[in-house]
Amino acid sequence: MAMRRPSSPAKLLSLLSYFAILCAALSISCGIRVGSSTLRDPEPQGLLVAQGTFAGQNGKTVSGSALIYKTGEVSYVLRLSGVSFPTESGLQIIAKVSGSSLPPIELRGVTGDQNYDISLDGFITPDWQLVTIRSTVQGTDYATAILISD
Image (cartoon, rainbow, N blue to C red; front, side, top):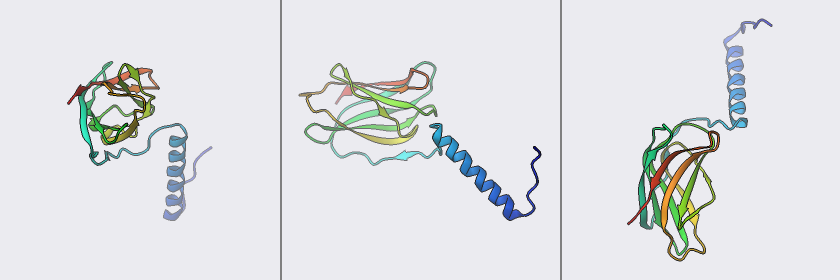
């Protein structure tokens, strides 16, 4: 089927708008992140209890650090600071504390500063060990930050 040339600028604009909406809907339904804005969450209030720098794994180039802030009796904030990870949907954060992996958290963005609330009810004195960025699509780890207590 041959495509006809739009007869006016208004029809061309309408056609382009339709195409943009179609592409956005297709991207969202396939789980592809639209946009590349850098996250800039504010630095958490609380006591910094552990931190580490990300190192790439499996040939991935990464940068940034993971910081853990104690914000309440059993409340913590995991902060990813100055991070840059490969652009891919399906990236998860997995924190290991006192020998146990916490449930995975979906990464909200691949660049910038981002905060994630964590509740550790049942841990008397948590021993923060590491934070890993894992690809659910590739089934492999992209980066790990070994945490050192402050």
